[in-house]
Image 1 (cartoon, rainbow, N blue to C red):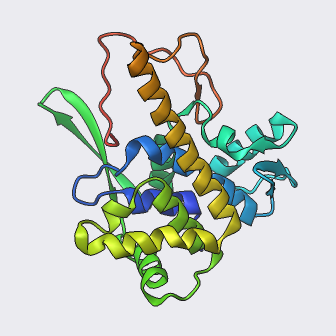
Image 2 (image 1 turned 90 degrees about the vertical axis):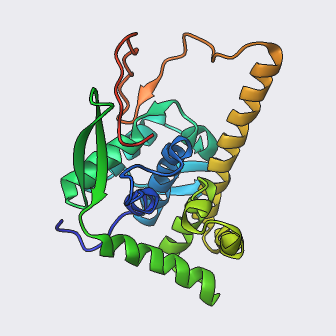
Length: 250
């Protein structure tokens, strides 16, 4: 793919991709994790820096990665530091699909088209080189089992994997309980990774609380009229009744 290093969003998505089904684990929270992973990657590239619980752009020069540069430009347009929790919880849709398309373009996954019930089109994704996913997983395993402080990238990846709930996917069952606990503990090894991981969890906890409050008050639907923005910053089009698109990421 012409690059010697993968980005943290790419690695997080590859970790979440189930090789047996071609779908991603934790799809609801993975978009949040990818938004947080973009922040960590931009910070490592020297484009942004934490300012308390906020994120400030310090160098608006493009990185050369189109997905990261889209996020950097959106941050730049804000004009002032933005709270990490507000950025990660912003109403952007489709970040998983954006990165799946990106990974396909880079040659790390390939799309497998099919049908559900012989009618509805589906798209699943398979890694083109399973050695990449094994190497990513091996780094996490080493950080968890050796107790040696990991490098900032691995620490941030571990923090985000925990934040989006991948622990049970990577280390399932009772036998994986201690590994899940150590995965959570790795948050402390990278300040930026810890900041965005906690922001991801705060967004999820806030969303869960809002749903419970809505159910208790008899409301079930979110307020209407609020604009929804796609991962690329473009207003999302309303979905028409009767049109169903089944993707490989649920």
